[in-house]
Length: 39
Length: 244
Image (tube, rainbow over all chains, first blue to last red; front, side):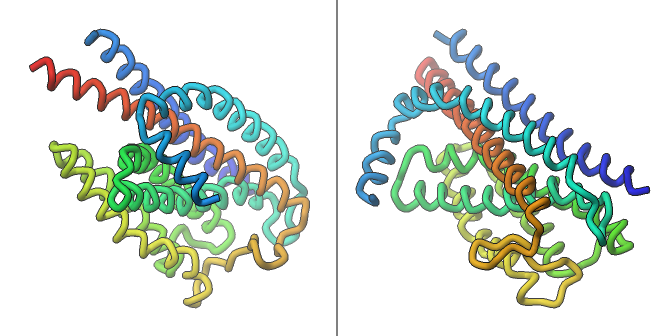
């Protein structure tokens, strides 16, 4: 009966976290590449 | 003990030394966070139904640790800002800036999952009670802190202004924490307390504590990764300025 609320809560937790993890790694790699290119 | 902490802090004030330490900690921290999260989710998904809340009790295992991390994240930013402003520690601003999007994300998660839990349990998505409102204010303080870094181009001025906001905004943290004790709220009081015996049965308490540890490891891993990124960006900025 309450499955929708439970799945929506886990989605609302792990989708933003996945986005934050992916964007943090992407920005970290970009900074590393730019620093290496500037040498 | 305090002297040892002072020595460690002074030793890692050098960004190059810190980057070496961060490179060593990076993978183990992410592995620990992933393992704790996998185990915590497994335990959370297999708890028995609560006699009052039924299956919706499963929402607690993401909502409560996210709210813990929202408050922990802001306290982390506060202490990092104090370290930077008063003790002039060069990594203080870096740590505070790196932690802000992580803390803001956990605050948003706590608000959204709280709303999704409130609808089946209280019959409403939102009420303007002290706990929910102070949590929303916390999200706005986080967003204001991030906006200052984006809006002010000169890094030293941005760091100083952001740190001042972080210190002033810390007043909201005890308000969030004790709002359920100070005012009559729809939100229930704390079920897990360091000083008192937990109101939760062990079947629910242990998965909750494991998820809390998982979110803490995730917070630290994300903040460390973002600190590495910030230091690389600072180096790049210095290199570009000296090249011009």
